[in-house]
Each structure stands twice: as C-alpha cells, then as structure tokens.
Image (cartoon, rainbow, N blue to C red; front, side, top):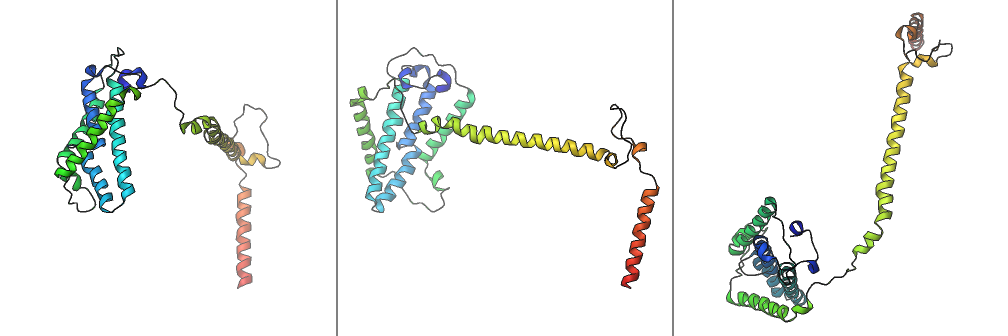
Length: 264
C-alpha cells in the first residue's frame, strides 16, 4: 500500500479499497491470521500458547495473552485496514503493485490458510509431539465471541479511532537526536582512521620499494645519479665488483674452518 500510494499516514488515506481489492484481501488474510480467526494459522498457534498458560494455572499470563489477542485484532484487523482503505474517499488512485509483491503476499496468505485448515502441517515441524485439537465447540465459540465483542466495541468507538494529523513522540527520539554524534564517532571517525592507516601504509610501501630497488645507493662512496632523469636502478652501475662476494665467501670459509679446528 505504501509503495503503490506513496503515503503512509492514516490521516492521508481512505476510501480506495475498491481500487485495491486484491491487496486488501491478502492483507486481511494476514490480519485474520495474526488475530487468531478460525480457519487461519493464528487460531492454531495462539490458542496453543493460551491454553498452555491456562492449564498451567498461570492466570496472569492467560489474561495478558487474551488481552493481547483483543488488542491485535482491534489494531491490525480493524483500525488499520479501516483507516487505510475505508472511511472518507481521498481520491487516491494507487498504481499497480509489482508482481513480486503480489506473489510474496499470496504465498504468505496460502501458508497462513493451509496451516489453519490443516494444523497437522504445523505440528509436523514442532520439536515435540502435539495432540491439540483446536476445533472443539467451546474453544471455537470462545474465540468467535471474543472477536465479535471486539468488533462491536470498535464499531461503537469508531469516531475516536480515526487517524489524526499529529507527530507521535516515541523512544526513537533517543537515537534520532544522538545519531549525528554516533555517526561522527563510529562511522566518520572509523572511516578516517582506516583512510589514514591506508595512506600511511601506501607511503611506507612506496618508501620500501624505492629503497630496495637500488639499496647499494646508500653505501658510502657509491656513485649516485648525476641527473634526476636517470633510472633509479642500473644493473651495470649497481652491480658490486666480483671481489667483494669472493672475499666474503673466503672469509666465511676460513671462520668455519677455524671453529671446526678449535672445537675438534
């Protein structure tokens, strides 16, 4: 809906459900599912949790879960769709929804319905054996009565539940106001450290390459370049005389021989 209308405030929406019947229908399947309507998966899974709390004599948990079910249906199943698609017609002409969105909503609606009418599909994937029959007459009547009374209360108080043009302050103000500071420290600051480290590493690498390219240039008495356009390394110029490695090899041989004689 947000993608096809470009709007996301209830005060700016309403009156176009006939122009978006498919999306509205798929949304309501999801709303019925999460609200615990019979024939959808929420009726199976939520009733399992609520019944477990009741059988365990967790009265507060049982009461809070029942109130959560009422609140879910009141908000997701009634207030939100009514404020979005019904009410005063604002003349909204939604564009066609992308196929991938329709396919995604359709798949979700299919599985919500499948696990609602065939709960064995859900039981098969639980980590323990389940012997729960949600289709008993008392349980079905309890759920239907709860949902019907919630709908009746919504219809009575519907003038008080419409969308209002206002700005709601929430806990998000904490991270919205501190976002510049955290961005400067943990994003910009870290980025600067990485950039500086990379620049220093590149500079050190260039210096090492320049040094190792012609190391004998740092030997005292070595003839350095006369002109700056001369290459940094000239193998004929930089090749040391043959006497130097021969002398070093002879010196090492003599030292090894002396060590062997002294230790023998």
